Image (cartoon, rainbow, N blue to C red; front, side, top):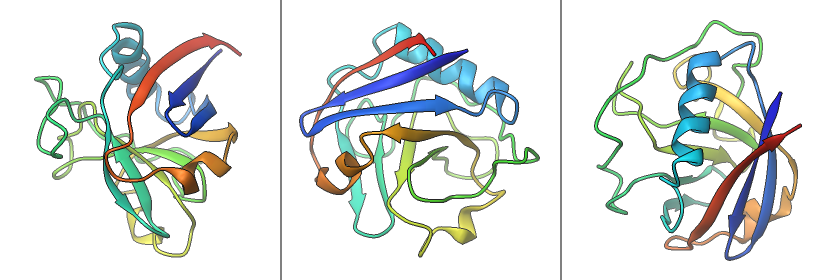
Length: 145
């Protein structure tokens, strides 16, 4: 098993993956991370009590890796609770590199089984609340769990 460490200008978040529920989404995120894709990108969308979103190479919310992946919505862990890592997309099966992390469950239940949940913050949960729009992702490291 692998886990991710997202190092931001506001601190580090350690995440576990939902490999059984979203194996292709996890694999995509790991591949992008290991290639350095996320290093230096920003959180381009921050909505209080909703999500922090990053992974756009243009920093505008319209960019991606140049391909799309299918949504994986049938697993057991498809609920957007606080700290959940999920794929952003512009419609079913259009995700690529953009991801978001949920602030809370309050305003995210409509995302359940519409966006692929593929991990959860297990350490550094407080960093989510410190992130502002434009804050940089220093790196995303994949390590053995």
